Amino acid sequence: MAPRPLLLNVIELLGYPNQRPLFERLGYRVHSEFAVRKAISFMRKERPAVIVADFYFQPDFRDRVSNLESLLATAQSRKDVRVLVLYETAHEHALERLRQRFAIDGALALPAREVDLETVLIGWLPSG
Image (tube, rainbow, N blue to C red; front, side):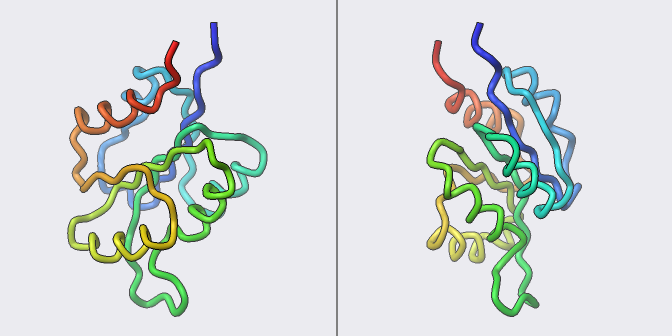
């Protein structure tokens, strides 16, 4: 039996329901972090197959668009990791700017429907 793929859940907003039961039901091992810097530290030790992270636009940042640049830069160095971003529709324009610089495999507007999360994540499970 193959080991279950690791899903890193990066939750900084806490403005939506806990999706951990869904992730586990789909067959993922789940590790949650509540700060990007801790998620990056975790990624130095472990190799997640999937990252699910919330995005928020921070117009007051001088040199960045959001909370995710550092995380996405770290993920980009690993070609086999998939990234799903959860975002507020009001910040979609900023997410598009981020997508021009970093690979983002999927994005869902909040509140993300469970069926949409499930569809994306099932498609990313290894076959067999």
